[in-house]
Amino acid sequence: MSASKRLLLVHAHPDDETINNGVTMAKYAKDGAQVTLVTCTRGEEGEVLVAELASLASDKDDKLGQHREIELKDAMAHLGIADFRFLGAPNKKWRDSGMMGMPQNDRTDVFWQSDLDESANELVKIILEIKPQVLITYDEFGGYGHPDHIKAHRVAMRAAEIAEANGWKIEKIYWNTMPRSVIQMGIEKMKEVGSDFFGAESVDDLPFAKPDELVTSVVNASEFVPQKLAAMKAHATQISVDGPFFALSNNLGLSVWGDEYYTLVKGEKTAPFDENGRELDLFAGIKQ
Image (cartoon, rainbow, N blue to C red; front, top):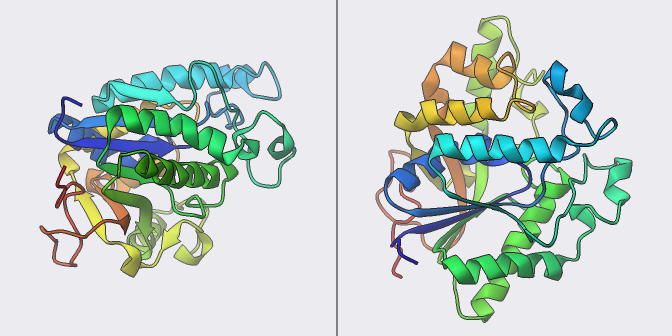
């Protein structure tokens, strides 16, 4: 517990952390905070976007998980994060559950099927070790309904509850949020250049878009966008440089990735605030 600020992020698969929280992680790490990432699965069921690595897929050699561990390590090097772990490691490994409704959901070894208290208690061990004041995870829908995202949310919230009963209270808990207005702007700008954003015609087509009024907090850290983009490129099997993420960067400028949005669900919203009344520092008001 050497750092005065300690941040814990709980994510489902490698790459989720960079897309959702890349500049947040890089900013707080640079500021001297202890940033710990816990990833719940290795993303074995992910699509492989690199043709020469297609044999890694789960329906072929089933070695994507090992490769994504390497991608995660490389991404964390770009963001300046030294403490990143897989839930339950080294003894327990939960497998990627695949998209909702797929046969993989029913495998006994997937994260979706894990016992909630068993998996939560693995996270409790980390919480009691590092004693984070701030926790970031997904909302109850997991952002877009992926079973591993939903389970990561449940595990994180349950672990915070158990940890508090065992002597450590996490003061502030945030859920990742993408405001509708920002996404709609992205869709419109992409249409202007003859491209699309995940095939969406409007923001109503995207389940992860949230009403703006749910956004309580924002991290403005555009100076760390180059690190975030480098980390995204490190997740090469999952994020294509020709895909919508980098198209946004090319057509809207790097600033599109410089703001990361959150909903505070535990703790007090504390100044400083931006012009929209959104909290600007996730550690504001921390007492311990």
